Image (tube, rainbow, N blue to C red; front, side, top):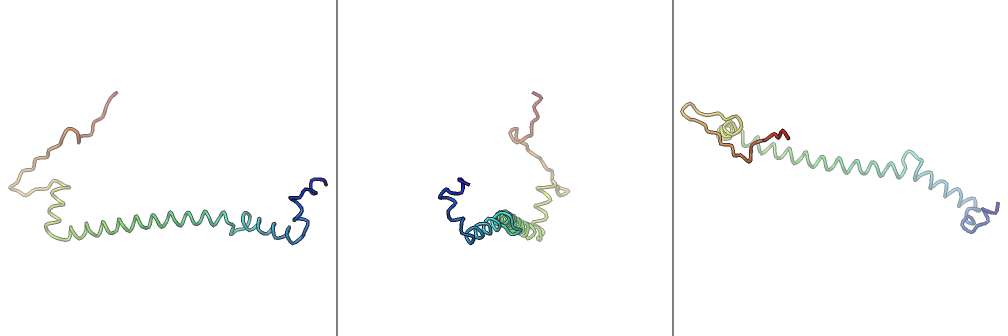
Length: 107
């Protein structure tokens, strides 16, 4: 019992201080709504809000692309650039530069 005669344990001789300390420890670490769980949930909320912002930006980008494609000129430009389509009286030459080609090394 000499261990409990140390001055660190002196406030814990009062039953109210002991009960309050146990209650605080329980609420911070062991309860279903503990501080640790709240921190984890708050970090999840921040991640989801960042993801929401990303998707909102993507939606705006897609809306702009759809607006461009809603005109006849936009559709023609997209078809020419992406699918290399041409009119009957035209010829298409695709120029690839050496530094833009994908190379596979057998080393």
